[in-house]
Amino acid sequence: MQLLERRSHFAGRSDERGASMVLVASALMLVFGVAALAIDIGSARTEGVRLQNAADAAALAGAFELPQDAPGARDVAADYAYLGVDVTAPLATACGTDTECFDFGSYTLRVTTPYSDPTLSVDADEAIRVQMCSGSPTFFARLFNTTELSVCGDAIAVADATAPCVLCILGPTGTSLNSVGNGSLGVSGGDVVINSDDADALNLSGSGDITSDGDIGINGGYSAPTGSVSPEPTHADPVPDPLAHLPVPSVSGPPAPKVQISGSSDVTLPPGVYSEIKSTSKGQVTLQPGVYVVTEGISLSKNPAPGKYSFYAPGVIIYFACENYPTPCADGESGADFSSSGGTSLYWTPPTSGPYEGVSVFYDRENTADFSVTGNTDSVFSGSIYMKSGELSLSGTADMSMDSLVVVDSLSKVGTSDFAINYSEAHTPPGFGGPGGNRRLVG
Image (cartoon, rainbow, N blue to C red; front, side):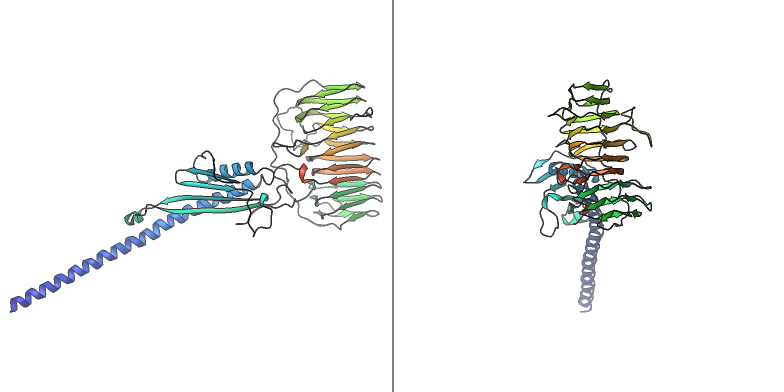
C-alpha cells in the first residue's frame, strides 16, 4: 500500500515537471515572439523611414518639372527615388495613364502625375505622387514562417501656381529700380520684389508712375516725391535667385568671325558661338531658331527698311558670356551686352521646348553688362530675361511691352515712354513660378 502511494506521489511530481517544461517552452516561444516583434518590426520601421525620405525627395524633385513636363517629372522622381534606396533604377514599364512603374527585386515604385486629389488646392498637373514599397527581411519572425514585412513610403508634392515674383530685382544694395521721367512702368501677372536694403531701393523721379496688379515688396525703402507707386509698397524679405537652377548653355566650337553688316544688307545666322553681331544696316539680321552664345555683344543702330525687323529671332535664346567662354565670367566682369537704338525694331521669341523653353535672354550670372533699349524702338518681345548681375536699361519716347518674366540685378527706365511687363506663364522656364511655383510636400 505504501509502495503504491509512493509511486503515485512520484508520478504526480513527474506530471508537474512535465507541465513546467510545457510552461517554459511556451514562455520561450513568447520571448521569441516578442523578440521578433521588437527586432523585426524595428528593422521594418527603419526601412520605412528610409523609403519615406526617398519618396519625399523624389516627389519634391519631380515637382520642379511641373506643370510643363509631366513625363520629365516622372523620370526625375524615379531617379531620385532609386538613389535614395541605393539600387540601380530599372527600365520603366507602362502601368496606367499618367503613371510610371518600376520594379527591382523587392522594390516597387509608382510615380503619378498629373495627380488628382479633392483635398489638394492645386490642379492635377501641378501635383505628383511617389509610392515606394519593399519587403523588409525578418530574422526571428522566420520561426513563424514570416520571411519579410512589407513597408512603404508615400509622398505627394505640389508646385503652387504662384510665382515668387514676375519682376524680380535681385541687387542687394543701392537703388535697384530707378524710374526717371513722365512715363509709366506697369507690371501685370504677379508681384514685384526688390531685394535691395537701401532706403531708396525704389526711386521714382518725375511725374510718372509705377503700378502692379500684384504686390510691390521691398526689402529697403522707396522714394516717389512727385510720382505715384501703386499698390503701396510693403516690406518683403529678399527672394533667392528663382532661376538659379537654369543650366548654363553648352555650345561647342570657337567663336565665329565678327558679324558686321551695313548699308541695306540682310544676313541669316545659324545657332552657334559668336564674338560680335553688329548691324548698322537697314536690312534684317535673322537668327534661326536655337541656342546662341555671344562673347562680346550685339549692337543694332539703324531703322530698318519697310517690312523688315532690325533683329528677327523667333525661337531663340542668347547666352551673353565673356570672352573666355566656356569659362564663366569672373566676379564683377562686364562681358557681352545688348544694345538697340536709333529706331531699330526687334522680333524676339523664346524656344518652345527643351531646357530653355520660355527663355530669350540669359546673361552669365557674373556678367555685369547691360541689356539696353534706347530710342523709338518698335518691338515684339517675349520670353524670360535673366540677368542676375546685369541691368535692364530702357530709355526713349516709344512705348514698349514685354510678355516676360524679368529677373535682373537692377532696372533703369528713363524718358516719357510707357513700359509694360506682362508676365505670361507661356514664356517662363521649367521650374519657375506659375509653371512651377513654390514646391512643397502636402502628403
